[in-house]
Amino acid sequence: MAKRRLFAFDLDLTLWDHPDVSSLTLPVRRVRPDEVRDFAGDTVRLRPCARELLEELKSRGFLLAVVSWNLREKGEAVLRELGLLKLFDYVVIEPHPNKDEMFEKLLGMVGEVEEVYYVDDNPTMIRLVKGRFPWIKAFLYGRDVKDLCELLSRVRGARGGII
Image (cartoon, rainbow, N blue to C red; front, side):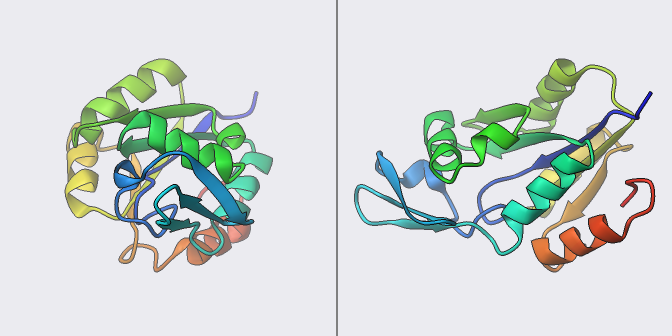
């Protein structure tokens, strides 16, 4: 039986370039394949290689999750409009900074899993999650991985799905 592996992503300044999609004015609409604009004209752009990374992980059998400090309605609206929501098996978007609590909820939903990977741009969130779940392999965006293209390259070069 194949190992159950999970890869979780933060959204703001990790999967996309916007610092806080909770500040958007709904509705959002897609203006380019990797870009949406809200009612007030604020733009959210997917990071380079984000879509390809998600698709590659999915093709390798990873479960995909979002763990984000945002308003759920707005985070999901952007994901949906970008055509990405369907790629995620689990979505935990809550309006508080307690990512360790969000991970507890996520892991409860997922059940037994052998490997968990997590990428976030905020070192405090990484520390919170690693402090509670030290076995999770976490990547600080901009330090542990320069960008999502580097992470995609690591995934494609990995043997046996281990990054």
